[in-house]
Length: 177
Length: 314
Image (cartoon, rainbow over all chains, first blue to last red; front, side):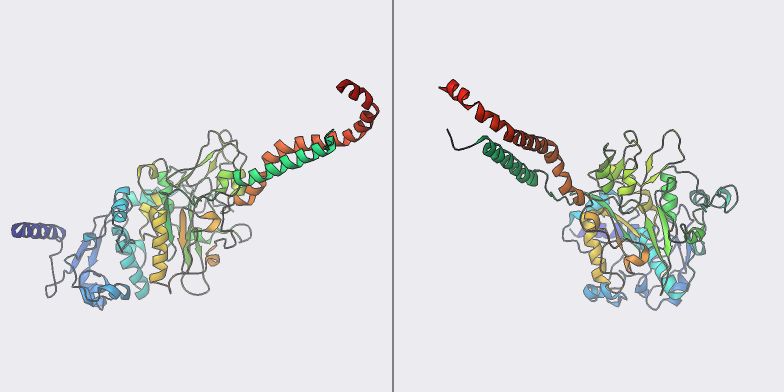
């Protein structure tokens, strides 16, 4: 039993190291990274070179973003109703819990299989990033344009029919009068 | 001789059979309630999350290979476009299965609303179509078959949300065009629609409709100050697969809040149940009346010829 536990812990440790290759693991008391590359989903836009240091200065509380990490210090009153006594988790990155593809049949079935699951309404990774970042940016008056945070890729321009892929024939050609 | 005259006999037969017909139609064609397929999928659109980035429009365009847009999808001047003397914002068209519109509010930030087919549980388009071009699939999608469509466009009139568009540009193969929930390429294979997958804000949540209803009410319960206490589409026109949450009253974001809360079909069901009766019973009934009317004259003749009949009987 004990060796299995150690194995599991070692496994988790390995995964953690992989997750934080760009930014060293830190816990309470350890140094927070100065910047974090958020790029696991980049396709239409390139990844975000997230200035962690800046956000540490701006945020009053780490749990403003890392809502699972710090247990009782929870900022969200909704979470605090049940989790005010929680000790917090190892998970610190969004992708530790929020999956990249939340709407596949497989994942939906998995979520619904547990009839006692309270958190039915768990966002995917992309939603988690944007809802966390964007809502706060609106509230605090920080930049809210897409390209204020990440530059669009060539695939993105093609997708949006923008830039060099913009519709030909002038900007307002063909607009229904 | 028995006490029943021919007149009385006809009278009771006609009255009896029509009464029987009336009572059976009530059960045979009467109001059967349908609350959607049990495993129907749906999408919960949370207007408080939508930022009007139009990524869903671009994703839809790409997924379905729709014509190149007039303006790039990152051009937000489209939100200012109005038609019909400013009364009408952008609508779904032959070139766009879905559009996002901006609604400026008296107070606070503008609210964005995505429009597309809501995939009703009991679609009015489907019931209005006399060639059965529409199908409500068990996954919840309302799909359309152009091969059998005769182009009457009754569905466009019937839709309470005014969604189906028509490819008027096509001279040879015009067809009705509307969102199909990405049925063929995605929904059928257990994948979410392209717009849902593309939405950066997860303003669109894909899942079983049953679960989404719970999720929607849970969001309202957890943040009662943020949301209007209503899930648009939960009961409207008998329920829709696409449902909406809003932070402002629904009529402030262009929703029709006067819609009935039972299927559009119910309005005609009771009438339609009369049709077989009219076709089947009325001819017999009026023939009966006709014979009665004629029979009155005939009876006199019969009286005259009575002795002959009696003789014959004896």
